Image 1 (cartoon, one colour):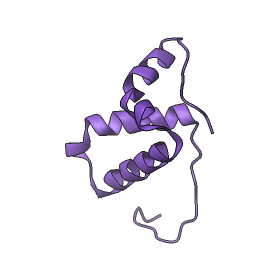
Image 2: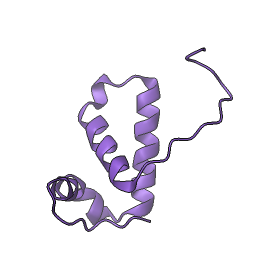
Image 3: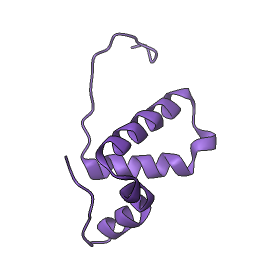
Image 4: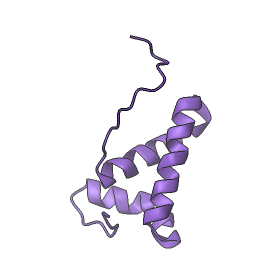
Length: 78
């Protein structure tokens, strides 16, 4: 199996909260990312900006932190 295989039509579905968590994780490590992860981060950011207001994006870390500790989340899921 080739790791650089083109044309492989697979898709991983993520819950919105999972997308937020991965986005925040990768943003903190942006300087260390390879090209593949930079592309994923860019697509994740585009999706989040599509779904969220600017204010919600600015509060994303706080909202995610609250929801991961049993608190509610003000982000919409879809």
